[in-house]
Amino acid sequence: MWANTKNFSAMSIIEEIGEPSNTNIVNKPKQYDIGIDSFERMKSNATKEEIIGACKLNIDKYVWRKKGTDEQDLKKAKDYIDLWMWALNS
Image (cartoon, rainbow, N blue to C red; front, side, top):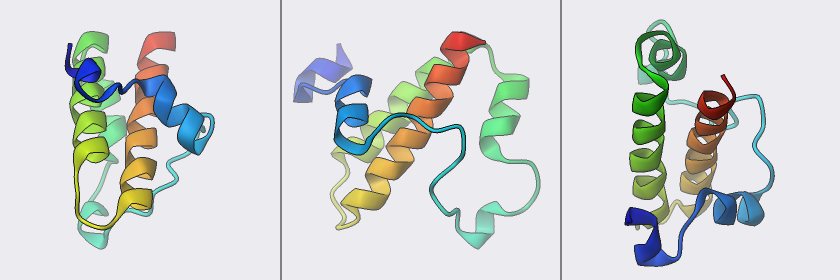
């Protein structure tokens, strides 16, 4: 499984940066301010399984990425964990 390659799990990120929140904590760049939020669009148009798959992919991307913005990347990963939790509970 993809998560086992770095001993990674959604819970390990939650332990590192705190419990999921109900709000998006990462400020989005201006180019994303063009209409409906990406997460809201996904909630409206994707199945639960598709949302979880997208969350896994993006969490993995933000955890493994090396570009000097570790804190911001972890906050973005946490946003996807929040969305994953939403999908599991909806």
